[in-house]
Image (cartoon, rainbow, N blue to C red; front, side, top):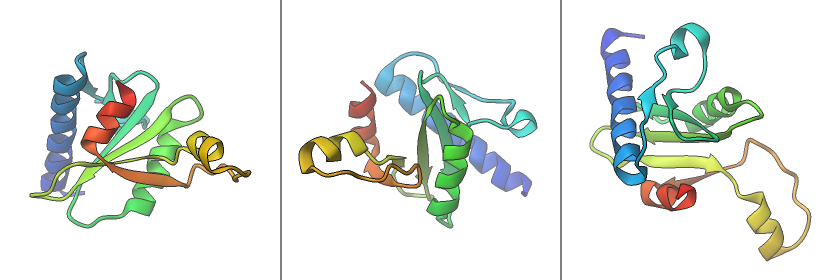
Length: 127
């Protein structure tokens, strides 16, 4: 990864920290040990593993797979992503419980299912 790419990624992580602090309160920090030890990108949102991608070429399937792996079994995966001059969007795990209650029937639960939602909807979800 080039220096410019790393810096862009770090800038994206700082942007997400600032947005979450403004919208949710609390303190959000970049996970500085993510490269050396693995793990998700941003710390501070209890119960969630936050991955951030600020890249021009969208690779949602690959990014989502990484997000789920980083979250493990004890955190909910969430992926914030955007390209330059675009708004942040958020990928979250598909809400199986809502679908089961409101649409009936059994569903196969798979972490590979996700929904892409606007930032404002994610903020409502976690408030």
